[in-house]
Length: 503
Image 1 (cartoon, rainbow, N blue to C red):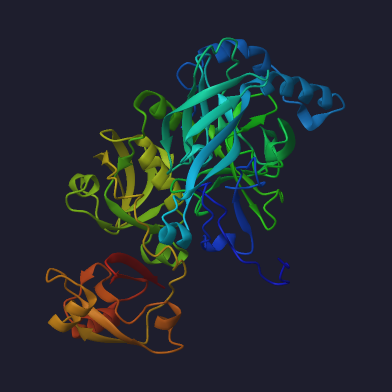
Image 2: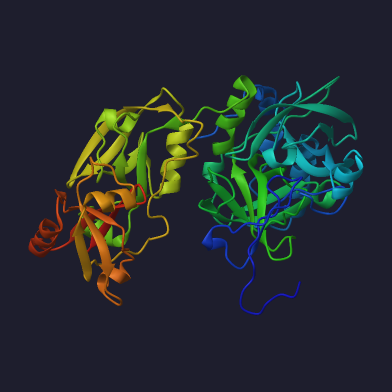
């Protein structure tokens, strides 16, 4: 394909490695190709502080020499020898994971002539990290998803059959267990990804393109990358260490030989490395790994609220100053948050003392806390700080993550130029609005007006202005006209509530 001069089509390389769907991904990843780093043996690419996972105590003891390795300050003259020592210790803890699946391919000839569908064997390659001496391995879910059989090859060239212990597609992690005599395995030392600094040297180890175990070097380019559209729960380490198809599930290590991330995906136009790779940090991975090892699945915490990003205009309108946080636009009355007293308009700034600076961060903190656990939320309400304990529920299977309303409308400045109408029975029917909802319907937005610039749309239902309920179009106009200074509008759009800040 010729590379267009000003844009590039965005496709998702197969998350489910045995199929090759094409789909648009998050706008932030425009002009790049999002490739999960999983290779194919046939055609290149078919497809908070952490504690060591249970059973890795032996790894801690055996790897004490690695942990004592100097940080190679400034990568001085002897850094090559120092890095070589680190790599030598870690290589035995990284494995190659080969998967195979038999598929049936049908055609019209099979239908008309009664021929059975042809069987085709598909194979793929990825990487993994040894967790314990008894044969537990961590890798990516997309490496093993849909596989009929799995084989793991260790650094000393031994091959094992592997069984899936548990998978978590929402984070793209999976835990395997080797079968047979697993003597002399060397578990990896899991480090604290939270201590990583931008610019810190890291190494990526895996089996790119099936060529064999490979080490590449780079730096930590960014931390906390979310909203990439790769998986539901994201908190990626970004690195420019070369990560290619086949590296999925391999180790990202620091210069002390500690695994700080599980290599997962790359952004690329060509499908190969272009210096933007992503790894799941160990601080996020370890609780998931522990749950998969012990329960076979992950049970996430659930708050039962709708959230949105706190924009600059909303900060002014809601008088929260420079505080970071996320805005609760709606609570489910029977959800954990609603029962605990959370309200629409609350701004959550911390969970158990951990700062919240984005919707993605808040989502991960709640989910990682787990069901049935009580967390303490720091909340700003009408300019006052509150501490609200909430006993989290279990995330329902039908709910992928707390809903973020208005995620595509990050700039919602002013709301003039509106034509309003009472919410009559016909409009309720057309907009699927229940009888319990009171408000005024936006029926027209003047082109070029501040309302149009605010991306308000015909069909939006205006519910309140500055926390004052709206029951009719006349009242809405009166409340808006009499409001002084910054204003906060609450609207209902396609079943989701969304706050709009007006300076």
